[in-house]
Length: 52
Image (cartoon, rainbow, N blue to C red; front, side):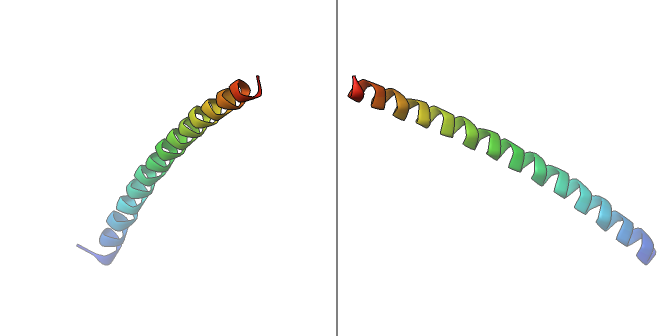
């Protein structure tokens, strides 16, 4: 196996790893946004109850 073949396999593996990492980051971001929306809506509801 030549150095070029090894390098090519390494680059392909890195590309796949980066794609997986991006997918994981997107899932974490979506969950963080959902949690923020959830807790902010709860806080808003509590503030509305306190004000009324």
